[in-house]
Length: 85
Image (cartoon, rainbow, N blue to C red; front, side, top):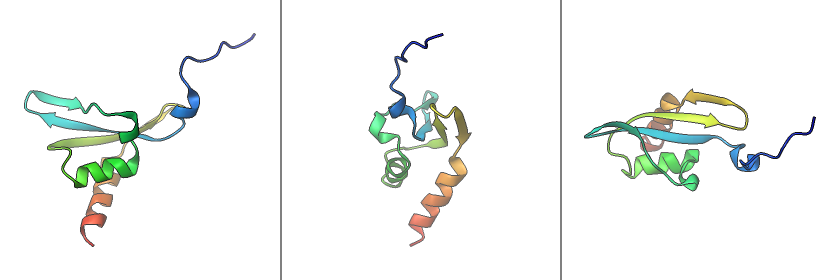
């Protein structure tokens, strides 16, 4: 049986994506962001420069590989490492 082509370009999905859950005055929501703002270093930099007011959690996932995890602790450790310089 022949597989039909995916409507999702898999080459763009084979990377780890980081999203931030933020506490807004109306409640918690996943922060809307551009594709190029979901990389690890970009999220770290955005957190360090105050782009998020009340971050609650950071999740990491790779849709191509089919996994997701809570990355909050890893992100917090990296933030602490960079601030401790």
